[in-house]
Length: 134
Image 1 (spheres, helix red, strand yellow):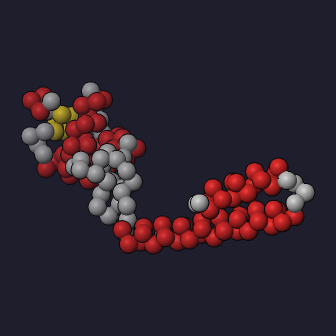
Image 2 (cartoon, helix red, strand yellow):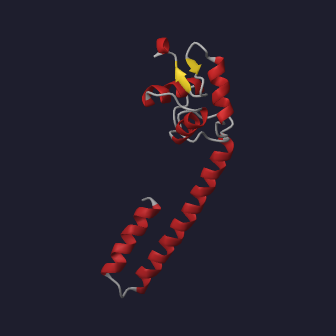
Image 3 (cartoon, one colour):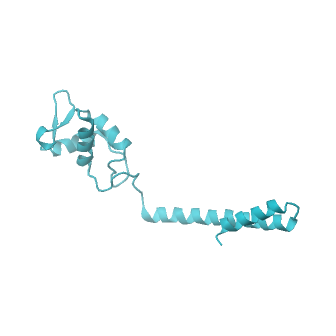
């Protein structure tokens, strides 16, 4: 029986026989085992996280930054500033840098410049999808 199931069964029994001091001792021992097991699990989890390195904050791991930018612009259906795009990409966890650091607005601007076939920068500085890339 898993320690939590053991403790639950003992607690039910102790409630039914509340005047049994031996039963209360068994419940206490089961709870101590649970606390120890929980501490061991936390240590194992921390060790696994250290071994795996920084983890992405979720989102689409296979999505590139320019794909995330295009997705945001497609869904919003209007031009946006690089800061607005960054907030949307970060807020929705659409793209995660390899080092886990947040995407900066300058990265958005640089990626847009690197993909002139997909994006255009308007005179007011906002970014839009090119009509033929939609």
